[in-house]
Length: 352
Image (tube, rainbow, N blue to C red; front, side):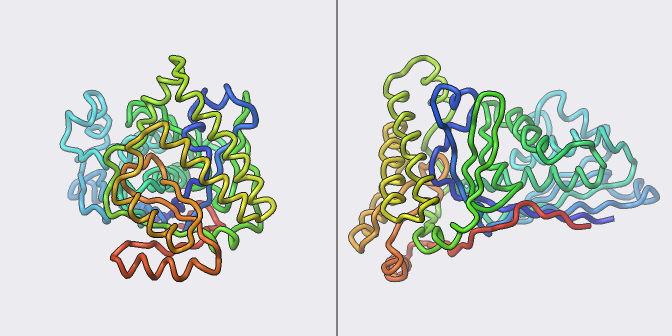
């Protein structure tokens, strides 16, 4: 029996960090806006037969894009590995979440059949595109199908969040899971007691015409530390509070821009978001990023912002439609890595 799943990464347009509970509760009309893109995280589950259990590892994890793997001789060995944390095992840190998600779903399965968990992610590691969260969702959905675990789609998001939180040891936001599960362009509205999606059905082309996605070639080294920001806000830091107030306003403008398909409002919203994020973390943009942004604006671009926590990884440039091609060509001529993308209208897809 084989099961495959894939889920899209995302570009966060506005409102990131506010998807951490309980930050969004302290502001009115809070949302996080993103769009799923065709940079997919993929999972393949290969289930063997019980007759082979004596000659093959009971469970094997392999990340094809990172060329790493780890095997456990039995499910019992996998369960025991969590008693001392991953540092007590030879498990590579990048596979720790995969193993923890698999362990959770094994409680619903409990079969002796060998299992291979094969993963890959088109989004570069540390790119700020939510690739690890997309992989988390793809794995949860594939294992749900395999084990017949009684989780609804709505319950998968908090499950993925909670499992990832126990791996990264700090609170995890939720926006990446929504885009990975559902796809498309969306505002994730966050209110007391619930979160829900506002879906933009005709804005994919608008985003593709005006947004350039750039990869610095470097994994994130020093951007926004969400935990430091989170703690600072709770402790009453006025600078952080002011920056979040600006991010809420910026998100509202981006939401209006998408609804009206207004390039001017999109520019205003993204630029306001960017200025607020730099107040949260001066190191959010590397000198290399700032050089590229300056060049792009000199060619007619109107705004830019980092993806995710910044300090490396990806960032977006907002451009008039009639200048996007020339800006992209000029950046590539300078050796800048521009990632062509399409909005992924579909979220996680499971086959098998």
